[in-house]
Image (tube, rainbow, N blue to C red; front, top):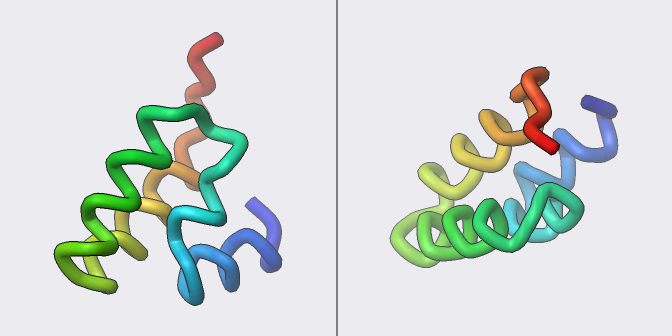
Length: 54
């Protein structure tokens, strides 16, 4: 996880998880609409996930 991704996850969370798959983008987008903090936390958790499926 690069510093650029962390900053992007803080500023606009859905953009930070663009390459993680459609499901991740939708989840982070919905959480960001509900509130900025849940979206940011979800984006950071998804970016920090070292267990890559696929």
